[in-house]
Amino acid sequence: MALQQSIPVRLSFGSSGEFAAEVDAARVALFRPGPRAKADSADAVQRALASPIDLPTLDQALVPDDRVVIALDRGVPGAAELIAGIWPYLERRGIQAENLTILQPAAIHAGRGADPRDLLPAEVRGAVALKIHDPTAEISCRYLATTSGGERIHLATELVDADFVLTVGVTEFDTLLGYRGTSSVLFPGLSTVDSIKRTIGQGHQELSPREQRPLRQLVDEIAWLMGIQFSVQVVPAEAGGFCSVLAGSTDAVFARSCEIVTDEWLISMPERVQTVIVAISADASGHGWQQLGRTLAMARQLVEQGGRIVVLSEISDAPGEGIELLRHVEDPENALRPLRKSTPPDMESASQIASTAAWARLFLFSRLDENLVEDLFMYPLAELSEVERIIETSTSCALIGSAQHAFGIVE
Image 1 (cartoon, rainbow, N blue to C red):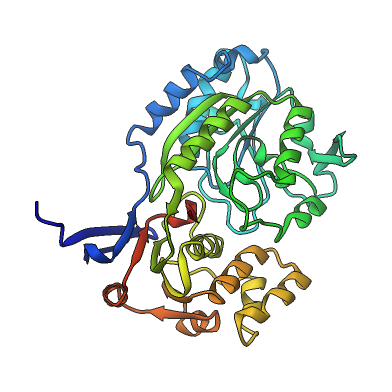
Image 2 (image 1 turned 180 degrees about the horizontal axis):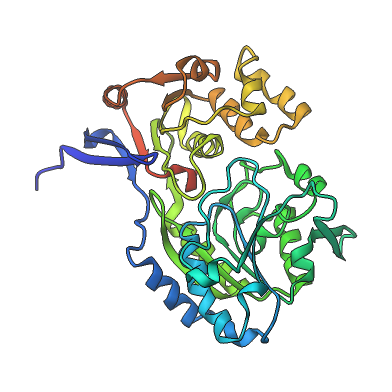
């Protein structure tokens, strides 16, 4: 049998970018484009809600005229399909559209995004309230309870006043929580300014996703204190959409969705490679500095020290406070201390860029100004042909699509 001489590689990035090449098979240690999105996403949502895990269907948990809050996390693929699929169960139980509020956490890194009510019937869409939590408002939060550790928890007033809260979110790797999902939407994003500030820059990139995190335990306790039992979760797919959707018992949905995330997005390699090529897709989570930071942190786990990381993107966002701080330090090793001192909202992304730049050589294909890219310790790439030349001079490389969702480990 003849050995394969080359591998056709295709990576989508941004909203419309694509890198396609024939790569020498001997150089490719890994090619991982990511799971494909479900083509029948609306049908998948209906099937999940019709057969929830470990619970009866959603309508059986409601009482007519309940005040219902859907706590919808940020960056949820297919959010409009999920809301449209949930509504018939509420309507069947006599829930009035005026008594339904969709509540989303405060956003640090992204704008409002698409309206999750878009696929509701027109007469319902206008009556359902959509609110973005503002932790700076004077009466935005109310006291919920005190945890077993003695912490007083304040949450969005809408949550505390609701008769029924349904969490809807995306399950994925998270440096702060290990796995984000189910109850993660509640805290700190739907809490106070102080709660949000305390978590800035507190990620644990050195830990594996399954290792215990104090914040994850706190989030689960808050959900228990609220009596939340039902959740709807999706697992992201390559280049937008979702590859899986689950509904039912909060604990069971979280456990199963974490297994799917691990199967689909954990990248395990026997050894580090010389070059890592990573593509960042534009999807519901955004396409900016947060995704760049996550992608670089993931690639750092797989590349050898002094190796090369090539990022394919269409990023054009203006830099935040932490990113701007990087432009005024001489080398990335000197950036971490001032970042920890000032704790800007984008501290995690800036720290991930700095620590990765201190480990490997970074190349960025984007829509950013070349001077900005160079100020951030990266080499700007103007043509995709430059990526092919980098691969051709590599002894080993890994190519990963929608890498902002992945987590890399070397066994």
